[in-house]
Image 1 (cartoon, rainbow, N blue to C red):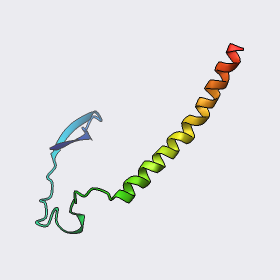
Image 2 (tube, one colour):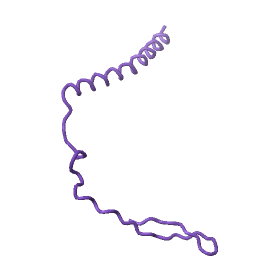
Image 3 (tube, one colour):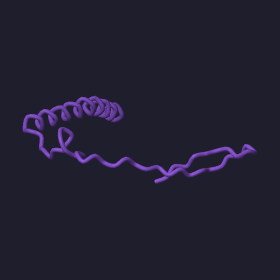
Image 4 (cartoon, rainbow, N blue to C red):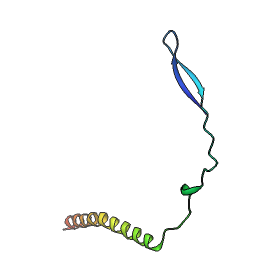
Length: 78
């Protein structure tokens, strides 16, 4: 991987100069310890809580919109 660096020549015109970039080696303990990824399914209580919360949010957004829609439809009919 290289990074382009813009330098100026003696006349003042820009010139691209490529400088190699080296990455540091990975430590021997990479992926171990407290930062290790754990594939775990959330518990039943967490699933029920998130499902209930999302249902409440969806209903609180769509119910007023549906009420306005129905009132406009009724007003146009009569």
